[in-house]
Amino acid sequence: MSGSQRALAIVTGASRGIGAAIAVRAAAAGYAVLVNYSLDVTGAANVVERIKADGGTAVAIQGDVSDADAVSGLYDAAAELGTVRAVVNNAGVTGDLIGPLVEVPAEVIKRVLEVNVAGVAYMCQESVRRMSTQNGGAGGNIINISSTATKAGSPGTWVHYAASKGAVDVLTVGFATEAADHGIRVNAVAPGSTNTGLHAAAGMPDRVARLNHLIPLGRGGEPDEVAAAVMWLLSEEASYVTGIVLPVSGGR
Image (cartoon, rainbow, N blue to C red; front, side, top):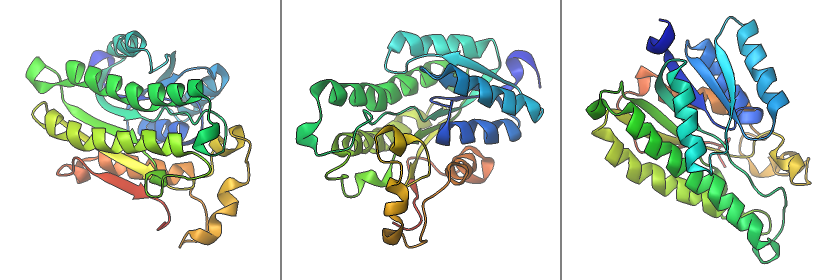
């Protein structure tokens, strides 16, 4: 399949970590991949090169998902690459700090909600506009990346972040019902403690290792393990699954 007929996956925040792992797996599964990034142009370029080196098709497109116009632009770019059949809303921020909610600056709370909640909502809206079988689209799948931080609320560290992911869970369940009539399945994957750069960026690079004793499997997860769960939900093996939040957390 080539040109506008090729199945395309949009992966937001795909320049590193879980997003990068999802982009690589999607390409291996046969999708052309739009590797979205906000700031890390080098990381996104590296992901594209890795995909191409493995024989896949990918392009890096800059865009801040908290900007509805930028989201529309992503889909305009996607139309030149293939037919969007999969959207993975992975882009997310913590504000690069760890501490109790009372110490989190107002601008950080605002930014986290803009990216993690509004950004996912904008992507979901545009997905239906472009993918709906009612509008002549091909239908497909949306996967939102949540977090098991919603279970306890991350007190003392990321309450604001956990709250944003709680909103993602609710959005996923509600939107799945709305999107079903448009030929679109909507699910979420909720990683637990995962070895990514998210913790180091917030000033605690050993945070995952420090939580190992709380995890039944005794270790943090790897980005590729989260990506594997995403790919199952995108596959026909999950054709009767919509509106779920799937934890990938080592049992915690």
